[in-house]
Amino acid sequence: MVLLRFAPSPTGALHLGGLRTALYNYLYARKLGGRWILRIEDTDATRTVPGAVDGIREALEWAGLDYDYGPGKQGPHAPYFQSERLDLYHHYAGKLLESGHAYRCFCSPDTLAAKREKLARSGSSFTYDKTCLNLTEEEVARRTRAGETSIIRLNDSRLPTRPTPSDLIFKHLRDAHASLPTDPVLLKSDLFPTYHLASVVDDHRMGITHVLRGEEWLPSLPLHLDLYACLGLEPPQFAHLPLLLNLDGSKMSKRKGDVQVMDYKHRGWEPAAILNWLALAGWGVTHDASPSDASSSAKNHAPDSTTVMSLQEMIREFDLTLLTHRRSVLDPLKLEYLNKHHLMQKIASSDGLTELAERIHTHVKDAFPHSSHTSVDYIKDAIGVMQSRLICLTDLPVQGSYLFVDPDYLTDEACRMSKAFSHETYDKVLLTLSEHLADADTPWSESTVSAIVYDKMRESGLKPKQYMTMLRHAVTASEAGPGVTAIIHLLGRERVLERLHKARTTLMA
Image (tube, rainbow, N blue to C red):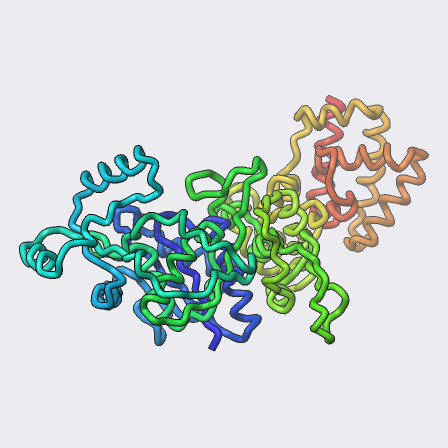
């Protein structure tokens, strides 16, 4: 069975780069009919942040990325915390010691630092002089029995022959052994493994078939393949995902602001839009199809970077070969575009509109604690009226405050509007309209309201822009917004008449 894994370290909140890695693992697993695991790589206790695992799980749940096995979802690969799998790493480290592919090093941190400095001054590319490789078995046994602290290093002077590294995205790679430290550490003095040993052991023992991880691990790929070869294990297929960049070209990281997934939740972005945005960041290469593939079209096409896609559409279309090799900038304007369209799709659905209204309900009540117009049903109608103006759901109480509370006719914006028309004409227009809207025998429907407004506009002899500016000022005190008749219908007869009266008395005072 195809099995993938997302393996974050609990060193902080899940950020956008991590969410994209989780998304690609999810998409590829579902595309191939497989499953995926959430594995927590917590072997560095000094960097572990309390609550980080719960935060990661909450972010994945909000985004709709449901993992098959992992914390809270026990399965055949448990435990899913590396700190609970130490016996496994010790076992495989022992196998490497027995085969001569690894050895114990008793050098202290200070000694190692001095050796590195000396080698660097001499112009050597080595980072360790292999002193402990030459210890006899008896000496190693004696020092171990005496309780001396040691680490376990890979013996890179006797590595098995293996194929050149290959990657599903970058294809054939240069075997960059020269960039690796000399005899890399596999097991630390605290008996915890390094990432290299732990990830290789876990990927093997869990049956991982494909490893999709960040580009920052490309330099470590030769080391990981060496470990598979030394242990006589078949490696999975690797795909390294090019990094995401901020607009200024800097690398996204947990230490920089505005990249935490839950920040986007709290600001009201649609999770579907976030996934859409991340999926298309770097998924945009169109190339000629292989001549041997007679069933393919002339080109394999990637979606445009603003193609609106559901999660199911992403699964169906996802193709690792269409990922760019270049690092990709996350453009917030593209998120705004995608979010607006995902929001519109939800609004078009009765269930989707209800879900949106329930989600924003508390936010609206907090924004307008004294308003009596904050029920879920009213908010649904408000969203419907404001939909063309909304980029994000949390825009509703900002863009449409006049739907929940009376407008303020003394703001700079309202005063600027009032300078564009005669106050006497304004008073006459509002009075005439009030008389007709006040007729209780007139049904209060949007079509009826619209007919009355346009009928009175024609009778006034004013240009449509002049008339509607006056009406918009009276009803909203805002220069921009959705159609005035739709706003009037939503507000209801009593509230509209109150506003028309208040606007007249305020402006004519």
